Amino acid sequence: MEELVKLDQELFLYLNNLGSETWDWFWVFITYKLSSIPLYAFLLYLLYKNYGLKPTIITVLLVAGLITCTDQLANVFKDYFQRPRPCKEDFIAEGRMLLDYCGSYGYFSAHAASSMALAFYLGNILKRWYKYALVALVFWAAVVGYSRIYVGKHYPGDVITGMLIGALFGFLFYKLQQYLVKRFS
Image 1 (cartoon, rainbow, N blue to C red):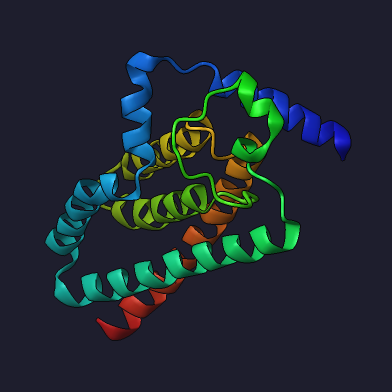
Image 2 (cartoon, rainbow, N blue to C red):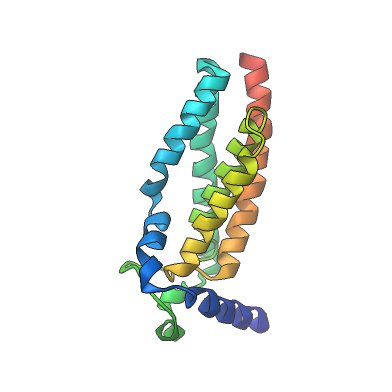
């Protein structure tokens, strides 16, 4: 286990130090939750355009449940494992910390989980009309996940775990959405 932790720290430092001041603004913007609102608004438009009102309402209600599930599960994991974030560790002096607030624990990344959950959920729904929707949204979620490493908030292991859990929840909620839309529309 110690070897895994050491590897995670080394990989964090490598990925975190790939950054440059030229791009810092971009990654800080990407990691900010509200920066994705235009994307969400566009996805909502696509849902409504292709689905109509009732299925879109079902889909949006499930989005609220999906985000709640991933966020709360991340909090449970953080409280249970109590793994300090990289920004709380001494070796952060060798890396780059771009945000003032650090937070207590980091395992696993709620940002990575929520963005990947949405990517799998909405990507699977929209691929019916837009061939590359799933691929594009998974790419977006991976960029959000990397931003957490770039700004100094999470280890790669935190992000990968969050992405895997998010993908699982996103797919399960997609299956639930398909059932509910068929049943109530």
